[in-house]
Length: 192
Length: 289
Image 1 (cartoon, each protein chain N blue to C red):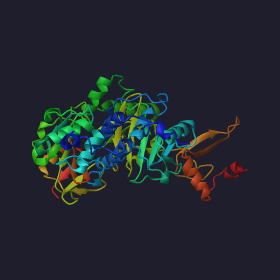
Image 2: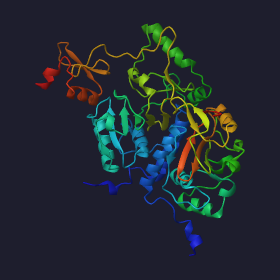
Image 3: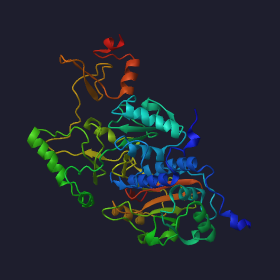
Image 4: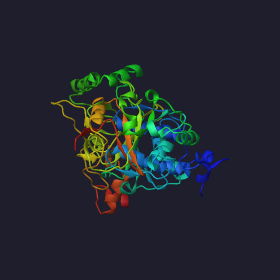
């Protein structure tokens, strides 16, 4: 087998139950505390995926979850890696449980399912790849935040509009390198 | 004896854990909303905390220190067997000290000691739907949640007042979470309701009913009431007879058939640590003898 063919077979969790457990705790921490930044270091995904985004996919995706790859993230290498390690079907935006890409490639986010009034959980979770992820930026308020928090977001208007759909809406992870933060739909977003 | 190698970490298979983890994340994103999940059969009967066990299994890491309480006590059958289950299948450390635990699985109590942001509280939930005894049909209660139609719950509380003179609901007292969903806090005494606005993450698992829900730290949790009948987190009007605590939730214990009784902390760890610190209640001397 050539190196290209075997590359997809590497970069998974070294010890799946334990790596996934640690990764999920960091994932849960950021979703429970919008604005907090944690490390996700367990995966070695192919470019252009960040380590954190790759770890999120290994932790959360499987054959039951449709994954949408947006823009430059939709490559053969990424598809092969996702297929081998998770078995998640690659789906269009309208059918996505998870979606992965840069903010520009994922926009307009109105394409993604926001859940239904009776089942608001049937909504997409977007993994937004960033060049950098910092704590300075938009002001956040809501569940998981004692007073206010701040987080560097790609823009404010789209996230404020998403919050207005509450309890419907999309939930977001932001990833850069091995750093991850989250923004659930319950968070009110204001210009910093 | 190390038997952990004979099980996947924390007993449940990885695909099931992913499904539970996804439900937990959606639950955190919509606080108080009951997320359906494909609850598995666990090696214990429904009603023994299968929901809490599945949530704990999905949240545990090998570095955790687990505490399990049943009605506040670490030494009752349910708590002991769940603690042993995770010692055996996850190889995690366990403790009875609230402040030392990183994950606390609970049946029907919130510990007296204030929880920190480094802790997770996992509730075992028998019936997650607060409207179930008012409306038995799931299709209808789901519609009522989607329409934020909670008038029936207020009628129930009002009928309490007209019949008993006060809101007679003493446990599983309904709360409004983040100004949107009415939630059953599981059958904790209403004394514990005000503690729910806490630093720790709160996760709720109902195994038989196949629901997971969550309350992130510092989420607004308001016990339902009326302006002229405000919520009252009452408890037995006594100090603990063993440790003298006046701020803890008490169990009433009948001592004989002559009407003698004692009141003791339901939180055994809280009571023990107070007694070790030298606090004494009315009957402390007798129990030492």
